[in-house]
Image 1 (spheres, rainbow, N blue to C red):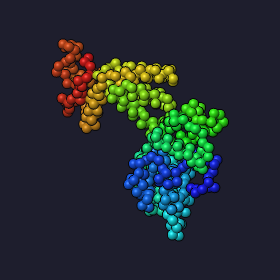
Image 2: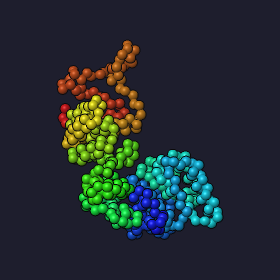
Image 3: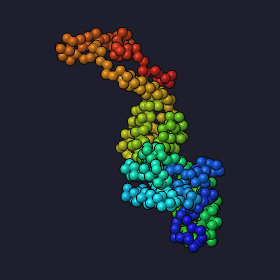
Image 4: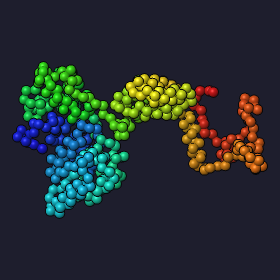
Length: 420
């Protein structure tokens, strides 16, 4: 932290210079840091437990950790899970143990991207957290339920941070323009309101990305028109869709796509499809999900949905991106508009339940093939009724289930199921 212009590194990125220095300077996260909110109460009371700050990039995880250090007066050490190992953890814990014995201030260990630590690395801090040698603050963009080991998670409190809203980011941008020392400088250029809105959308709720885009836009304007416009922002800001192929962004987006199709919302279905594909998702992954949707959610209400979905999957395999987006879009819209029935899924689950409950019940003898004379002698196939010999192609007295579950009903047709 710094207290004056003398302490400021003007060569640091704008986002680093504008990092809040107190709880009151933090914008957003009112559910955690507003008046009487749980995280604020814990910080101000000096009773902050070990915790995991879970949220997307640029939402304030590192800022909160540093503010905690300043407010609490505790010794603050930071490690990055990308570049640190067990030896670094042991060194920090050893220093905390020594300080504790010497009566020095308690220690906060901030681990950035804690989800990148493997199980043995997370195990290395477990005892120190449990006995209070350190107060752990972990930061992660990934769901800690999957990325943080259960024993450590049970000893820490999880605080979920949200992406900043556009108006909150505009507030930060205005602050950077007005701050002559930490901000863009003593003579900031004029910035159009539309340009501020465009900057606020850069990165999708990521304050760091928006502030650094403002810095680039100001520098560009200084060398040209002296004014920041929407065109200026477009020329300097690389707006990337936040996404990862095996993390929360991936699972959240595909979940939204599946539920939009299931909910018969064609507009939302094609939107989430575009979000997935434009962010770089593997189109074959999306195609496989479309095939599953056709069987699971449309099912017998429209038996043509499954072959259409399989055709889209095959087209995707043959032609790839970007053209396969057309086949996937056609399939997604068709499935969204189709009538829905999950009777086939329910029937299979009920049958599978009977299989697990009753085990491998013997196949009735009359349904077995008598491939040899010996098998015929033992009754294989005896009494079998050939369906085509009967009116309507159905043998009315034929039993097809094992005797132990004779009469069981697994398929319960939906009123939307198509009649064969």
